[in-house]
Length: 109
Image (cartoon, rainbow, N blue to C red; front, side):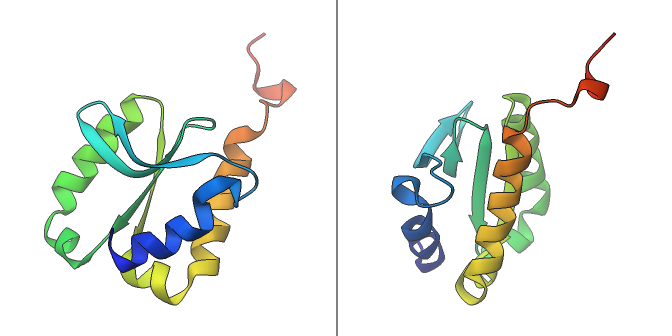
């Protein structure tokens, strides 16, 4: 794990974020996601500087993971290292959004 991944993992593991069960190195399709939560279907990727040159490949990877029903959140290493609380807040918002039941107005009639 990179330093950023280790820092984020220390805050996600053992249900430390909203009681959600995150796992490391989660296989999804032909990819291995940095962190994943099966319910709700959420993937968190932590990208280092090498990813600046791989934007197209990362976008393709995110599309494939999304095809498996997952939402993908991507953060740069420096974001995780310098503003961990903001990264955790963004993950928590997404977890909360995905856990909410559909509103009655969004159900088919």
